[in-house]
Length: 117
Image (cartoon, rainbow, N blue to C red; front, side):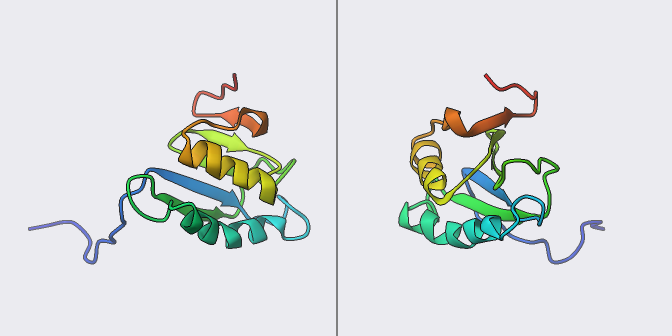
């Protein structure tokens, strides 16, 4: 007899998961939500909505890192970016998500060991 719940969800394979804080303390005028809203189309244009480099995106309510938002976290890399403007997001997509090289100038934390080098 199985003890698994019925209706297990399915999730397509992905390479990285981008988490965008859209909480009200991250940005005062909705910049974080606007960033998230445009992210799907940006990923599609970059070819990151499918295939081996597919990127999943999720909005979160609060990272408890409220200064200098919008805050974006890229997993499983453990890279935390701050002040992610539209132009900074383009740099992150091109260099990190496509090229595999984090944008050092925008990183404020690396996890899970808390190091930033």
